Amino acid sequence: MRPNSSVSRNRWGFPDLGIGVGLRTVHYSHILENRPEVDFFEVLSENYMDTGGRPLWVLDQIAEAYPVVLHGVSMSIGSADPLDRHHLGKLKALAARTKALWVSDHLCWTGVAGRNTHDLLPMPLTEEALSHVIGRVKTVSDILERPLILENASTYAEFAASSMPEWEFFARLMDEADCGMLLDVNNVYVSSFNHGFDPKEYLDAIPPDRVAQYHLAGHTHKGTHIIDTHNDHVIEPVWDLYRHALARTGNAATLLEWDADIPAFEVVHGEALKARAHRREEAPVAAAAS
Amino acid sequence: MQAVITHPGPLEEAIEAPSARAELDPARIASVILPSKSLTAAERVGVYHGMYLLRMIEALEGDFSAVAHFLGNDAFADLVTRYVQVHPSVSYTFNVLGNDFPDFIRASKGLRRRGFAADLARLELAVTAAFDAPESPAWPAEEIARMPESAWESAVFEPIAAFRVLEFAYPVNAYLQSVKDDVHEHPEPARTPSFVAVYRKNYEIWRLDLSRPAYRFLNALAEGRPFGKAVADAARAHQGNPGDQLFRWMRDWVAEGMFQSVRIAP
Image (cartoon, rainbow over all chains, first blue to last red; front, top):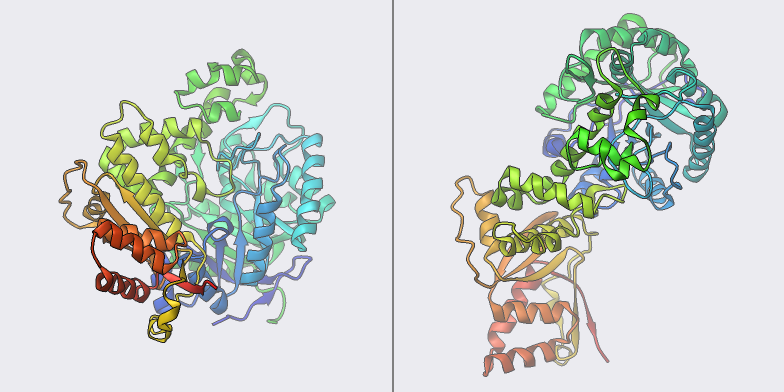
């Protein structure tokens, strides 16, 4: 059940896999029993690195039947701590096992001094931090033997020491470390509200040929700030940003994240499939099917 | 920033804590974190601070749902809050965060029924370990009939990786089951020894109550005691010949897939 994928405009020729869904435990039985027509699944890397039980057994079946991409939350690429080579080794093995088309994580740090807060903490956007992350991304890419794809995280705080906006940091990082971007449109929206910038300025500054994948999600508006909770439908302004981004990059693999108050698989998949209309509307497939 | 985020107290207390002060004078926080139009610098760090403990509690609640049920939400949250100060996550995965939780509970003076809660946590940890253990094919039950009679004496049975056998001071397996049941009819958490084998079969976790003799026999085998010596030990404990019973247990355990191989010692 591997759907046809199309070549998208990114520089690595990563295919436009279509519309995907995040693989979540509560949906295992539904997927295995019904084999829904999903273009691809995104797998949370850390959930499968240290288990030999049912999760890995399910993943093997999913990876056999669907295209799979890996998405991590613990690489801590921005941390001052040394890279965790044990983690990277397991990540590489998992990517090989699942034949993952690409491997992504977040531009963030998750902890220092050996601790892991399991949160995606904001980077100081400085020349020093940029230089630090460039070196680490190159190391990771060498270890994984593939370009690293990094997602923009939702952030709730900004450092006074930052000397450039996040979009400039990202663009320079991708250019100098030769990595790609998982462009989370909802995160751009969330951070733009929290920090008061124009989200379209962010999107317009991202080199289109570096975007390998999109994320969409719902969030929670707290009045004074927005939290990236992945617990609801995608709001219209985020769809608008998605259309805006696609107009620059062409269609690329797009995934809906729903991680809290997770509804039935059909609801999650149905929300994801809304992206199809937006893709057809403004950004026809860039190249012929492979 | 990390010192504030991971502090167990309210945000104001976290910012003033010695661990945070060592990094930054609270009066200077706005010189490091920018305020937004609607939040102060401290409130923006507070967004992360507020989520940290919730994430830890949620992670451990997933692995120790019966302990959480037994203690109640507030007591469980309080326990986890204290636990992660001593045993913070130092791994890329949450899988190992709860490894010290049973011992921490046992040492938590003032915690209601901590002996019972610690045993319950130990059982839930064993379930998690069996859930995540590598898959190892079970030794086929039909092989029992093919074993030469002479081989049994020195046979050493290796359990599958997803196998644990445990002794408790309380009836925690019955309690765990009562939490899983639709109607919770909890056993009295009184001191009563209990014995359980936890194992994975066809990617599902099974918990088998054992009698004390069965536990001793299975535990001896799992620790690598040759079958003949384990039988002799059991016979001494019984002051008789429990041979038939032991072979029935053995047949059942093999049929359940608890062992992956047999080594015949020379």
